[in-house]
Length: 118
Image (cartoon, rainbow, N blue to C red; front, side, top):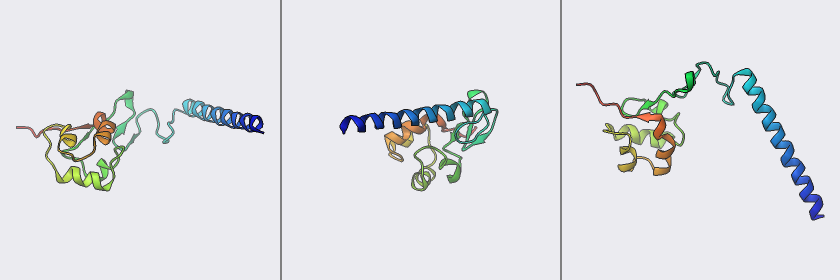
C-alpha cells in the first residue's frame, strides 16, 4: 500500500511539474510574465520591465499606494514609512526600526532615498 501511495504521489508531482513547465514556456512565447505584464515596457507597481531595469521607488516622496506595491509592505508599514520621513538613506528604514530586517531585505533593491536638491 505504501509503495502504491509513493508511486501515485510521484506521478502527481511529475504532472504538476510538467504542467508548470509547459505554462512557463507558453508565457515565454507570448512575451508575458505570470503577472500579465508585457516584457516590452509595461509598468506595474513601480517596476519597469524595459531592458531589465527596475524603476526604484523613492521612500521620501512616494505616496502610500505606491509604497504598498513593494513586497512585504502593507497599509501599516507604508504609513510608518511616510510618518517617519525624511530618510537620509534607505537603510534607515531598518536602523530606525520602521520595518523589520526581513522586509527591508526584500525591498532594498527596489527603493531609494533621494535627497532634495540644494
